[in-house]
Image (cartoon, rainbow, N blue to C red; front, side):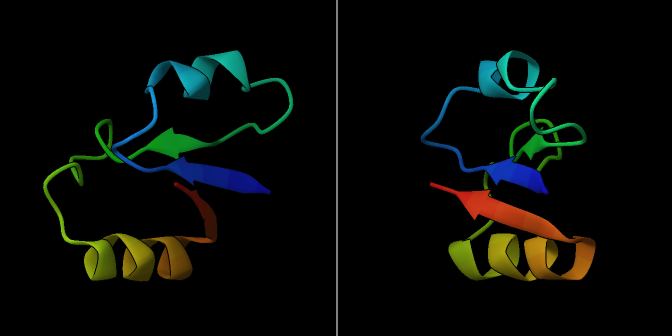
Length: 53
C-alpha cells in the first residue's frame, strides 16, 4: 500500500514512514498542494494511492 498525504499533514511523513509504506508521497511533493480535493482523490485513484488526511 502506498499513501498520499494530504496538505494538512507534514511532508516529513513520507520519509518517516518509508520503511513501512514505500513509494508514498505528499501532495506538496507532487505539486498537488493547491489542487482541490476532487483532483487529489482522482489522482490517488488513478495511481493506486490511499489518501491520508
